[in-house]
Length: 342
Image 1 (tube, rainbow, N blue to C red):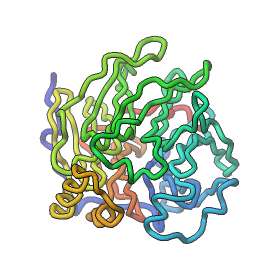
Image 2: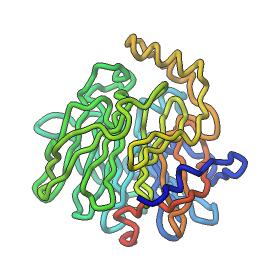
Image 3: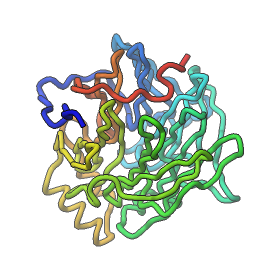
């Protein structure tokens, strides 16, 4: 294998810029080839940010009642909480809503329809993320069936699962996850990579022709270390898997040979230690949790490659009102929508 540029890369924090303003909970970011960004927004919709920095909040027509002032904790636990985003094949925006516990589809003018809120006769639970593949199948992650996601921040709860939605309808593709978060495919869609936030690791499955998931295995280290609460992931064109650790505010990479590289560590070691101790003792409270989060992207939640050359890295952060970005030595792996959005 040729030399991996990421092993010689260091982020100069003085070179980090930002785009957008007054954002609320920009958990997930979608990028288009013209430089346009779409960021999830806790006011019930998405923020449309053009390459020149101008922006427009597009609220879901059925969710305007939530576009009001709420407490800090409520903004992360109640109401409508657009979380993971993906583009449908016609350019509409698929929204996994962490607050309303359903998968939705929103036109770029705001009109919203429900796609899925139950499976096998039961409510879905905390819908976290949605990903579309090249066969137009949707992969939906459910973090937990518990109503309050903070109660799921324990080491021994594995009620998370993945739904595959295709022409045959919704189907539970895999289950038994510790706080299921983002998922991504590699270049050839041979493997599906799965984030286990409270498992502190990345898993992957081989995907067969029917879309069934097989051969579950750990990808990279069996545990990502102190404060290992991985959240968002994305591949670059070399095959490096980039990711964020949300409460310890770390940006990391797992190379194709399984090496873990920490590119940024912005967290407060003492507060992260206190959270770790509470987590393993199953006594995490909102007070302990919300003390964490600092640096350039507090509660670092997602990583997105964008720009016209896919060479810009954007970081989504739950407690940040802007989107930090910097240049990567390797372009990102194009998402399935890259040449499809309208």
